[in-house]
Length: 459
Image 1: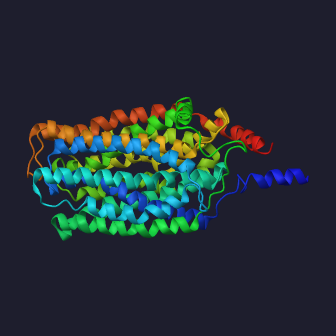
Image 2 (image 1 turned 120 degrees about the horizontal axis):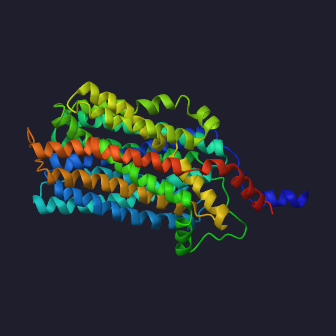
Image 3 (image 1 turned 135 degrees about the vertical axis):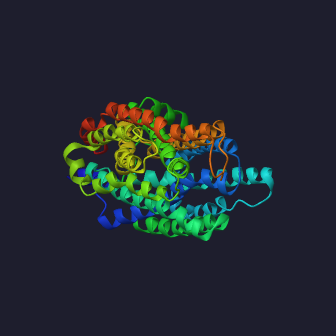
């Protein structure tokens, strides 16, 4: 009996312990700050560069892709750093404390492009965007990884992801609904600088609150595991982890889709519907399915599982772009299609981080070691590539169509490209999204995997 107690003690905090609601609330609040920057950059930076700072669409498209590919490389590196971090605060938590102020400052700098000529503007954009990537990665990878360290209990992890989803949605709504009207009311470049400054200040506060209020509970996978699994071994195990591969490809597809829906949406409302103010309305309606879903998410997840719910809503989301095709210039039809399309966002907001962290348990069960940070960073690489690809497609296709920034009217070819970015490409990506979710079947195996992992730790 004494030996059994000693073995339990050696494993550290109870692996199945669930965080309290206050801790989950503060973790979600920290995510609110992180997502503010992600949404501000993903939704408005392309428009800011082309129509406010005066940088050509083609140059912006290339910048988006190059920077995001670099971003993906830093993700892998940061995941390894997190796995090897040793501090009294744990592996992931200290980075949330260290990176709050730098991320807030760089967010402000990003939307402060000076009038220093075309070459100077491009150079400034590259430098500040890459700087943002470095700091954002050092914040976001540990933050996503922290979810896996806070609990291993399946329902607790799902509920924790719901908290992050609520604050993700709130942050996205705040930016997409208020940023453009506030920036326009203030006017010019100053308006966007003020919006970025408010976002940066929020990040500093929420990251500190999250650091102070959270706890890492999940101990290393086995008594024999070292903190420094070789990078090559870790990466090889990832590519042999079929569920991680599915989720990473899902991230690429989903974040490309999200970048198109949000980043190209302002061009659509401005030049197809004739009023930029409609973008705020569409942004709100896009999240209606997620807002409704939060009231039932915990119960539905417990009864049907994350994957089954994600699959159903992904299939529903396919019909959004199809509805928009009925009459692309009709505001009621566009808004109706937007609501239906919003079902495709539900998995991203409510389940994606929990599902990614679940693949870490599968990898540990299959290969005998745990690389929580690497799993999250590599999946985040998929998100960054998707977001970069979406941003690049916006810039390149607009340039291909002859788009002229801030022009009163656009050519027929530019208008066609705006339709492609907002309807045709999203339709194809939504189909791919549903297929990948159908292929993901880890939920059925997860309880048995978790049971066997706990038995290993008790030996």
